[in-house]
Image 1 (cartoon, helix red, strand yellow):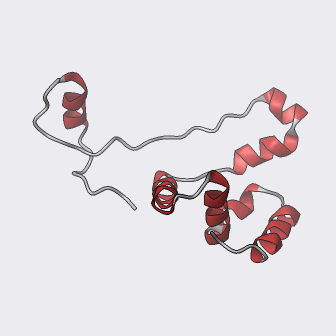
Image 2 (image 1 turned 45 degrees about the horizontal axis):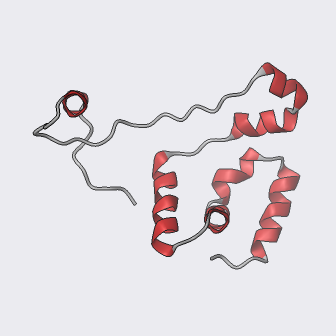
Length: 113
């Protein structure tokens, strides 16, 4: 679910930031999420390093899940289950195939909140 708001305009955004009483509105600027990895992590925890390298998501999905969490009063674990059951195409490539298959089988036995 996305808030209905005017399209992002950098000049209006600047005005919102610097003026105490701006007279126009605009959407928030697009958010960029950077997932970091390091050489030391890659050496000491290669599986975790591979996970971080494969991980990706977007603001729309996160916003939708957080909205549902709030609307349905879900805890974080329940919200994670909703995500994993509804969006296997998003997370299955984050983990090795054997783990993805095992998780998918386990998820079939758990009722979604």
